[in-house]
Image 1: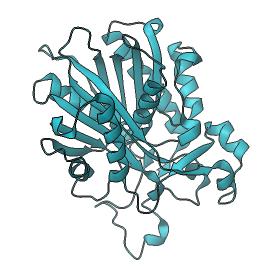
Image 2: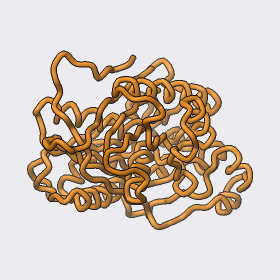
Image 3: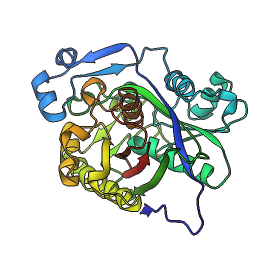
Image 4: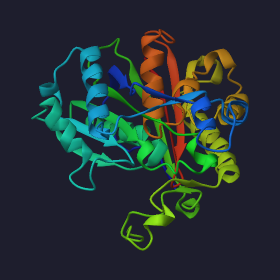
Length: 338
């Protein structure tokens, strides 16, 4: 099922005014993984493009990482936490089932004027949060929003499963969205999100919820860890990311030649290359940082957006595309004029 951006009313313009990100200090390299499971540096790079990933410290939670990314985004935007009236956190690794991780971050920041809640859309989470914030701001229900994607995936990885443990890492990214009230403000021109629940079993954490609580009897089965059917996930990822990117490019009145940079989900270099080729976007206009961080789920596009922004990979007036996919299956994209 696809949710469109076409609405019967004129939506107010929404712009991104700041970005931030944070990754933990500890690096887990492919050489380290060679000592843990039957794998090799060459095999991992050939299959994924990943060279290392970051792992959060034992006492470092999703909310801690999200708070640090948020602080950097606030500083980049030149505003304070009290200016926020909305906080949305995208995560599949919350600090606790309840309250929401967004509540912990609201308290950490001192954002006393903001409502705060979590959403769960796996690797598509940051873009789902963006779409939600755009709807709040664009309909006049909020003025300034903080969207955060933060994951501590190291807590849900089976470190004995070589097919998945090589893929994932920890980290967080954030962005500040506000009403675009100046003629030269950039704008989120178009968004697209979609879901196909019939493919829920391609990528999931089967245990830990109400359907399969973790008990002393099943704890040894490691059901509260990531499980993936890789080949099928690859095929659907390429299909839906291409379609979502094409949708927002068309809705924004653009062509692939107008795109200064595409920021795809940082899951697998082969997926990124396949999507770029199908969109006819040359490699020099595709942002990649997965070699440093692996797949950080919802945080991947958020971290990539912040790094691309700070590295000057796009400038004011440029058009960029962010596109992702995740468990559910879910997918999402946005066309943005910076």
